[in-house]
Every structure is written in structure tokens, then in C-alpha cells.
Length: 305
Image 1 (cartoon, one colour):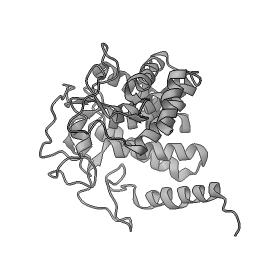
Image 2 (cartoon, rainbow, N blue to C red):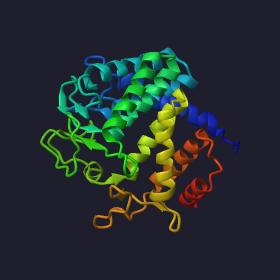
Image 3 (spheres, one colour):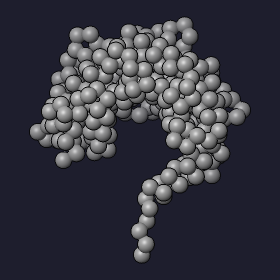
């Protein structure tokens, strides 16, 4: 039996399976942006709401793929989604991106959530790199400044992650009638527990998305302020989040980074998240010239071992 060339197979699946499917079916030509949810044949699933997390991740994906395989269709898709984000989801008055709009781009839920917003930050940085776009680079830096000004915890480090539309902190979140967690969930359905549990506590999952975005932004801009926050987050993960004795990442914390458990939800090990954390911490350490930092190495290896 001949050896399979996995690199070729992965690339073929990425370009002709995954990306081509979203090029063919996922771009909302009628209302802009990307369609919220599709069935296996690529047909839209109502109600078609659009979250900032989903739009940001697709903008990142098309921009990232274009840098490696520069086909015009990826640029067109990325630019199409970015136009929708700018026109329908950016809060021009108060800064930041709204959490949820309907298919037409009408506001459904104006919450400002830093983790989903960080997907847009990373996507803007990737877009600026892929298409040499100075405006997108500046928008990424502007978003960083808004997130940092509104959410950074100057006393304990890290971020408060959930805010109302006008940037008032949300400590005890109760889902309203309009809220939903994804584009596949009707507005009156129950919101996902991860979104609820990340309010009022500091979440390692949500901070990991911010770490990832800041690392990409620093790689693109080399800005000192971004580097400082990236250093801080890397230290928090190495020293507070990862339990190096047991080899897993705690999930929820108090403001001062003490474990905060509710009925065992912070002591569970999420294997996929732990693997991602090890990878993203390693990548951030390399960017910062700290690949040999013993605290970071110990934490990353503990997660993998």
C-alpha cells in the first residue's frame, strides 16, 4: 500500500472541501457578510442571525488562506465580509463591535464581548498583512485600544470580558429574549452555558482568544503597547491558569486570578482547549523571545504530557 502524502491531502481538503464550500454557499450576496448557518447542501438555515465571532473567524480564514494560496476569490470573500462588519457591526459612536445582528444587519444584541471581538481584531491584522491594507491595520490597533481601555484590569491583570452596548460591565448575565450564542440558534432559545459562565468570572478560554489575537497583532505591528499586554497574558497563563501539578488548565477565576468553581465547572479538563493553549502559549513565547522561559515551558509541557 503506497504511503499517503498527508500534506497534499490536507491542502486539498482545505482548499477544495472546506474553503470552496464557503465560497460557493457561505457568502451572503443579498445582505452582505457571511451566512450564519448552512445545511449539508449549503442552504441557509433560518433565522440567519450573524454573530461577530462567526463573521470575524471567516474574515480571518479567507485572509489567512489568501496569504498562502493567493486566489482572487479569497480576497473577494474577505473584503465582502469586512465591508459588512464595518457597516453593520462596528459601533462608530462608542467603539467596539456588536455581538449579534439579523441577516439584514439590523441590531439584535448590542453586547460588547471581548473574546468574540478579538476574532475581528486578529482578522483585521491578518487582512492587513494579506492585502497590504493600512486601513485594516489601523482598525486593528484602534480596536485593541478600545478593548484595552474598556476591559483591562489594571490591578490584577487580564480583562473583564462582558459589557453592555454602552460599555457598562456585565457581572451577572441573564439571557434576554433577543440573545443567542450562534447564527444557528433562534433569538428566543437558551443561550450557551459558556457565554453565561464567562460573565462575572475571568475565563481562561476567553482570555486564550485574546492572547491569540494580541500575538497576531503584535506580529503584524510590533507595537510596544500590544507587546506589554501579550507579556502580561502569557505570564498569567503560565503562573495562574495552568495547574502544572495536574497538567490541565483551570477554566474560571476570580478577579484576582484565584480558582472560582461553580459545581465543579472549573475543575474539568477540556483536552482540546488544553492542547490549543499549549500551542498558542508556545507561539506567543517565540514571538516575545521567551521560548526558553522555564515557567512557560513547564506550563506548556504539562498541558501536553
